[in-house]
Image (cartoon, rainbow, N blue to C red; front, side):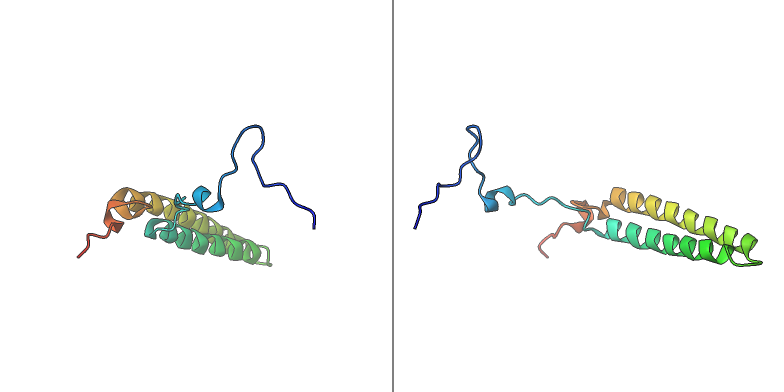
Length: 102
């Protein structure tokens, strides 16, 4: 069998081991604030999507338009709710999510 060369970095940079590169938690928003914002905004997007189709049917333009804008408003409320919850300590690394050991 032929020997393979050991893996090294390029241009004098050592290769970082897999475990060392992934030790730090990135924190992709896995928090109550983020999940609440996502679910509320998802509900608003679903309502707006339904209203878009509903408004395109005959005789429903006005009701569909109103529902569309209500869904858009719900999405804005969801974003604001996420920001408020994050400032209240329910975001990633928030003080309300720390385990006090009790």
